[in-house]
Image (cartoon, rainbow, N blue to C red; front, side, top):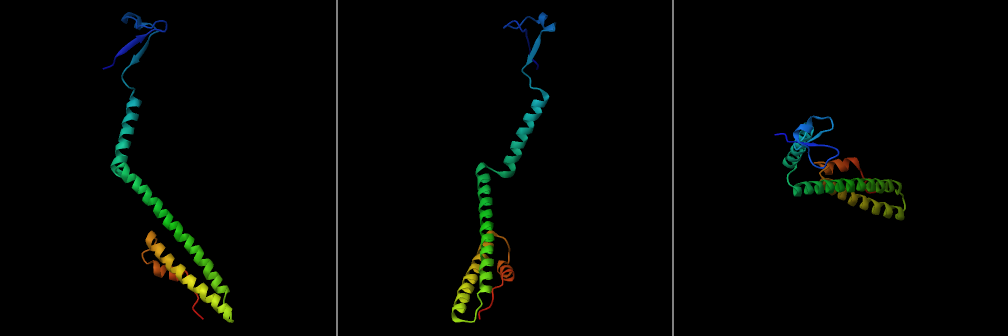
Length: 146
């Protein structure tokens, strides 16, 4: 029910009911306006919907942490791909006929094979592909041993 409290600008105390009919009278209501009620109802509904879909605060935090770790795994896999590309480029440029060139080529090829295996493991751990071994071996061919 609506409670009306008439107030005059010049008085601290509410006037009697007969003064409320004048233009100087303002009414205060304890009832919330319609838009306030609607906004509050929308906020409560949004809070309940969010709690229902995402679970408890612990679940939300673990989901955010899991997402962050997945992002780090993918970032590390991309860094390894760049490193492997550089090693393969060095391996192609190190092909030489003398003994020193063959040792350098052999060491670079060994490092490229190890890096490619690390990349396969990293991609499998991050869930980037189901058949990571074939995908990586096809994308990053390493020159055969001489």
